[in-house]
Length: 425
Image (cartoon, rainbow, N blue to C red; front, side):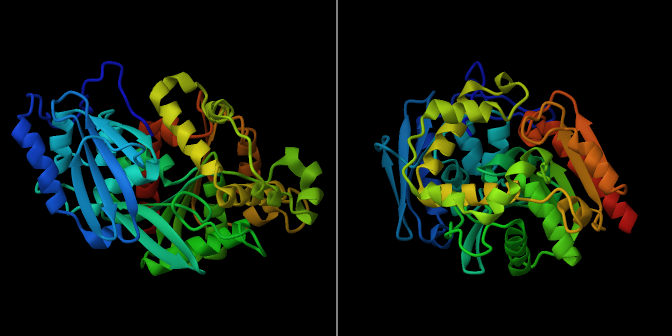
């Protein structure tokens, strides 16, 4: 997401060590580009053909382009036209990033980087290079294949494993604030679910994109990466998949945290039979005349007060979502998932709420009082179906708590993991 503070000056988070404040020498800045290229790891860029522009807005060096192709890297002065991602920052921040004094995710949270273009590729840039000499933690991209589907995740930190599952229409970048906040004490995996981000997008045939299928794919990811007893945090659809994962594979899940987690929606039950017995998602294969302003309006609806976020953030999220929706495979995956969520039964012996009552994994549910997609009245339904659950409603928060209240979300998840660990000790 694009990040820019009101002054354009680098900011330092509370409690952080002082960062470089002097105007960096031109030789130092140019040397940083070359030193970074020397740390390039071809095996971490397999299959990539992409260009990144690093634009130092406050320094004579200006813009530099990194082009990665066929396991090679080319560094050239200037900004090539139409890069896949552009990272705009100041020279002092650039030196901090190259040295490892600060990583890209932390700089993102500190409002020191502005990103345009492909947000996933922007996040991946740092993971293609060996860590700097002063690096405190390692960011890496992990690729796995489960059920014939290639999955991509961003991994940071070490310790108790935590898995982050994004919502419908989003990708792993939507969890960057929480990944940064938890990675100092945990090994955090932010996963692109099948059909989203940089993961494969298979056609929605058979049981693909049902919540059960998605949960089984996630379980395969945990097995392939050697993770057990994982704390799974999901936003929206990701929360629904986290619950399904805990019910189908309880041995792999230590706890579940749902942030605006999707449920069986009462308001969609009249459409349930139609969704279950038809396949409207195939209309996603047709061209979609979608305007950027429509996408931006939809994104604004996710937040209680969208003006809390820098306008540049909303522009970048809009562009990223609009680009994704230009891909028919992405549209088919999104609509197939939406169909299965809307078709979830809210009544009967095998309905969602009856199945939820069988969940034995510790769970924490957070609902936003201003969430327009998953209404906070579902908090009472969860408490009734699952009396052992911890349920909370946050005032003045919308559908994406990890972005709208990142510090509170980080503290809440961190404290929850500690309490579950204590209970099981």
